[in-house]
Image 1 (cartoon, rainbow, N blue to C red):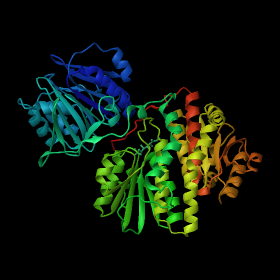
Image 2 (tube, rainbow, N blue to C red; image 1 turned 45 degrees about the horizontal axis):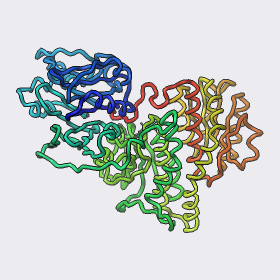
Image 3 (cartoon, helix red, strand yellow; image 1 turned 30 degrees about the vertical axis):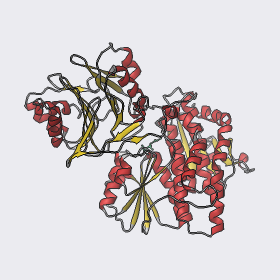
Image 4 (cartoon, helix red, strand yellow; image 1 turned 90 degrees about the horizontal axis):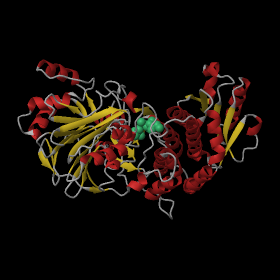
Length: 593
Ligand code: F6R
């Protein structure tokens, strides 16, 4: 949700800023811009992607600069709304990620004082506010300005006559990349990895003064030291590796992701799960998440209730934030790939204020969720660049299986049986990937329709939701998901021969009921594509097309089915020529509420 970058050192800043911005485009890509300090500050910005900006850029020489790639919140994508924003004197330029809640009051006050604004953004108040306090000391001016600001921000300030970048963070991610004789700043690690693997994560309330050879950080208590971390993955891990899209590469990484996530917590020999968590006393669990992570949470509820016999609720984080929830001795678990989703962070904070113990399940080391929650359970998906979550979703499911097994209330033999099956999942997922061509033809078939329905029952109902979400977000086909038994309560009105239905007919105790629902759908003449177990000999009689999936214990079927649904969405979107890795209006990390 907007990506910001900064560079200070001995090299030309412009190419470094552009390269870093390209790495951050997954965070937003409706417009972008850079500012480089040459003899004066040169700002270039426009709607569109970094590639387009680069083509139109003159060669600015300068060794300090900042850049921004935008996901619009205040004001449509336009040249004037793109960042960097600059003050009246043209001497202070700012890039900002986050939302300044009181920008209107600040803007009114600054306008009365004579400042002139050129955009609809909240961010533009920043350079003007800093200018209003500037008396030669940039650090003092930035600190004073931040006292007036309410909201979330990560920002980088560039000023004429100053050989330093000022940075600040509150509820929006910001990382400093440590170089030799040069330093880098960015919203996220991939922007830095071409240049350094040493990073310092800023914390909320931190203000930093970055020069080419010094990184000084302050919070309210004074100067602070923050640990330098070495990133264990390389830029290669974050490249497409020969695939047409990051999404396809990430779908194909899933057997490895399952192995890695299991390997971190499941003994290679014994059927022992050790999550490395301090024990927490609780009576029930509340799972909180957004989007795809919420769907993982819905599966988690089935697992925890079945395997661990714990009462579980699942809520969409943004709804929980406005609810009158009553929590007792509840263990609150936030599921978030990025660890930066503003709604989820707000929800974890609320739960903590209510006295609950909290756990974050996340993919991103050092992310905000890990700082806010009492404990962290890392999935091992490695960086996910495609905006649509795929491998992180699978890793979240694996984390939830492990969590349920770590709390299992069942006889040892059944538990060991489940662990054995869990270990087989990478190979089963590989079988699906090996049959990709067969699935791609159904994706192409779906691409010709404007609407689709996804139906399932039980533990696979969240997969229907996830299949529909994937299809709509990357192929722009309108898709609805329903528990199969719900269709007759209204949605049947929409079923026609032009509405394909993807029906997950899992070989569990919902199978007979599912068949009944499929027959009802066929009576409305909708074409039906079933996802069915390879051993299912009956299903062909009732549906138009069957995608066979490898047999697994029913409890693990969501893993298998979700891979098929990812491929269906991918090939439908590809056939329609969509921007798969960066779908319209979306961004990878949603750091605004
Ligand atoms: C959909 C997708 C989103 C995210 C959601 C939560 O493919 O990626 O729905 O799942 O924005 O993001 P995280 O998991 O980072 O909190």
